[in-house]
Amino acid sequence: MDATTAPHRIPPEMPQYGEANHVFELMQNMLEQLLIHQPKDPIPFMIEHLQRDNDCVPKIVILGPPASGKTTIAMWLGKHLNTNLLSVGNLMAKEYSPLAADARRHYQKFQTLPNMLLVRLLQERLREEDCVRRGWILDGFPETREQALMVQTLGICPRHVIVLSAPDTVLIERNLGKRIDPQTGEIYHTTFDWPSSSEIQNRLIVPTGISEAETARKLLEYHRNIVRVLPSYPRILKVIPADQPCVDVFCQALTYVQTVHRSNAPFTPRVLLCGPVGSGKSLQAALLAQKYGLVNVCCGQLLKEAVADKSKYGEMIWPFLEKEIAVPDNIILKVLRQRLDQQDCIERGWVLHGFPRDLDQAHLMDSLGYKPNRVFFLNVPFDSVIERLTLRRTDPITGERDRALSLSAAPAPGRGCAHSWCIVNVWCRW
Image 1 (cartoon, rainbow, N blue to C red):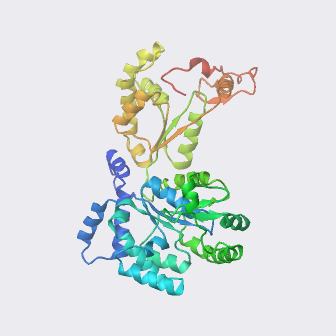
Image 2: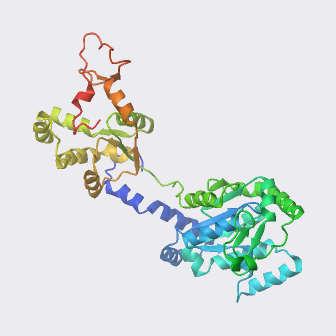
C-alpha cells in the first residue's frame, strides 16, 4: 500500500488470515505454474491446480557419489514420507509404456540413455496420479548440469536437495562390500549392514561395476559433474556427511526435508518472549524492538500505565495492585487487547513479554486471535537467575534498571534504590 496516502485501517484479522492460510504462497505457486505451462485458458488450469492440493507434497532430490548410501536413504525417506521413489532403473522398468520400452532397448544397446529420452521418461512418470498426490524422491538424478537445466525448463522443481558427501577412500572401501537383494532391491553390506535372515543372505548378489578401478572412474566423473549441478539449486541445498552411521544420515535428511523454507510473503512479526523472572526478557524485547522496528509490549508496564492514566481499566486494576494480588486474566486481556489492536502494532508488529504466564492464559490469548508467529523461551540456570535478581537495582525516579557490581555496592548519590526482586508481583512478570 502507498504509505503517502491516508492511514489504512487494516483489521488485524486480515494479515493473520493470510499468514494462517498461506495465501501469498498459494498465489505464488499458481503464478509459477501459469508461467511454466502457459495454458491457453488460465481459469480451468488454475481450478485444476487448486483441486490437486499438492503444494506441500514431498519433492526431493538426493545426490551423491557411488556408495554414499543415497539409494538407501532415498528408500527410507520414501517409506517414512509415503512418497514415490524414482530412479533411472525403475523409470525404465515401467510396464505398458512405449517410452520405457524404447529406453530399455536403447540401454541394452548402448548402456546409456540420451538426456532427452531420460527427461521425457521422468516427465511421463511425474504426471501420474500417485506422484501428483503423494510427491516424489529422485534418486541420483540429475547427474549433469544439462540434465538439471532440462528438468528445470519443464517446470520440475524440487523443494529440497540433499547431497551426500564422503572421502573417496571410504567410498571405495564401502563399495567393495555392497550386496543387492534381487527380489526387493534392498542394498546390504558385508561389514556394515549384513542381514540377519539366512534366506536373504543366500539370495544376495554382487552388483556389477564395483571394482576399485571402476569405482574410482565413477568417482572422478561424479566430481567433475557435481560442481556444475549444485549451482542450479541455491537456497534449497543441504550437504550431509555420509561417512557416519546410516541412521544418523537418515535422521539429518528427514529433519531437513520436513523443514519449510522461508517464505517471501509479507510478514508482520508477532514475537512472544517467555522465561523466568531475571531471564532478560525486557532487555531482549527492547533490543528486538530497536533493531526491527517492533512495538515493545510489556504486560506489567501496560497495567502500570493504565493505573497512572486513571482510565476505566486502571480503576479496575488499582484495588488488586494495592493489595498486591494477581490481576484477573479477563482484565489483563482487555488492556492487552486494547494495545495490540492499535495501528502501530498492526502495521509494525510487536514483541510481547510478561503474558501469558500459564497454559490457560495462552489458550485464552489464542482464542481471541492474538497468535504469535515467533515464540522464544529464555532458559537460564536457577543460580544465575538468583544472582541477577540479587544484584538488580532500580532507580525509583526514572524506573531504569541497573546491576550492582557486588552486593555491597552503594546506591547512586541522592537517590534511593530498591531491590526489584523484593517487589516481583505476579502482574508485573519481569
